[in-house]
Length: 373
Ligand SMILES: CC(=O)N[C@@H](CCC[C@H](N)C(=O)O)C(=O)O
Image (cartoon, rainbow, N blue to C red; front, side, top):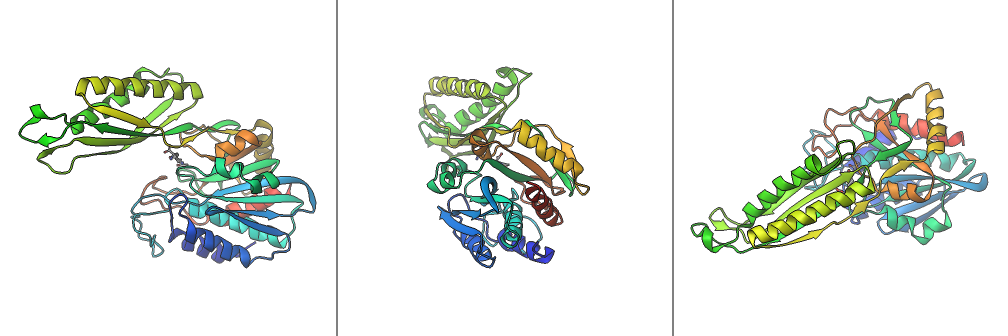
């Protein structure tokens, strides 16, 4: 296994160069450089867009296990006091993908030295935060050639202590849809509101109305989320805005509820068009299917984790987070789990502070798991 200080250095290097979906050029080069330092005896490396596939030939080539790590960062201005803070202004690894990549490299470097019993396929996937890379990688010729029989992935969990692995069978992460709404009205002088159709007022009404969907239209025994993360409109305090945009995300436990929420959004925007004499367009951006852990494969992993003396196994509840890893699990039995990293601040927070002790713990645990296969 790579020495702990090398793993930490890798994480810190990656932390400094977060890049957005399909712009992960430096990240891809960094990963290729680290992989080129490993023994190549059993490795085959293929780039895919800004991501990578690394195939490790096992002693017995009849079975392949896929291990996926996502590689993109988020548009967040980092507010940590690290001396290895992001060097890319306005970008941060605030969802732990620097951890995910480091752990994958740590596991890969071990199996580059110790031939695994079955084949392994490491998938370094771009654009998890959007617009999504899993579906495209899944459909690629490289993936089809090396298609795994089982897939696994992890995600850091700030709220769990180091040493914890949390997972469950069945639904783990929600169905998601991005939401982009664009409003067009008529601008004008702030002193002449009767001559204009103010899109700041219309957008404000719509944001408030959208909040009623989960409260009034979703079965309380089911669950949904409509979060608006962006509202933009206007150019100056004394000009009535002729346009506005609203951006958000929808999360549901079921595909049916996603349909209900989208229908309600469409009905509300139609009402807004009439009420404010404006035009509204909706774009649902990237949609991710749920992450659904296969019962048999997940139970086998749970059994392994239960027996592993250094693992604190937690059977957790599902979460409304999204993950395009769900697409892999639609086709291939597998599972995802949360890795405890004990951060006071959560995912997508500019102060996210995951504890680096979680990295060697994860590398060792995953090596042990894959070695037991
Ligand atoms: C684990 C995590 O935080 N994943 C993201 C996935 C984003 C999906 C998409 N861009 C959206 O916003 O709907 C999450 O926000 O849950």
